[in-house]
Image (cartoon, rainbow, N blue to C red; front, side, top):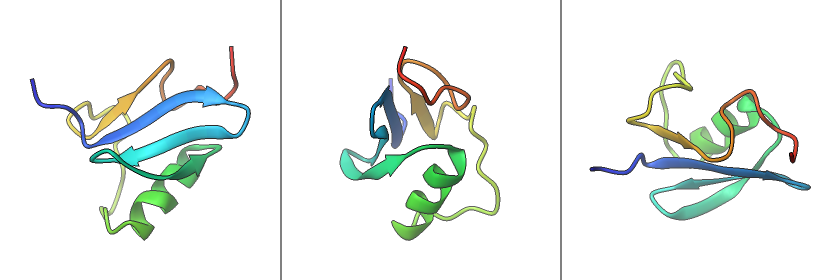
Length: 69
């Protein structure tokens, strides 16, 4: 099974770490931050579809989870 290129890691005190093909791009506090981080890295699209499992893997909660459990 092919892994999604974008992984949004579990929430932590500093936000959620975002990686693209294994490269750490930074931390996000909301989906808008994820989009900005990805665009800066050259991963551009007109609209991000957050539940697209071919693109995104959300660990320990989806795009609506930003606080630590």
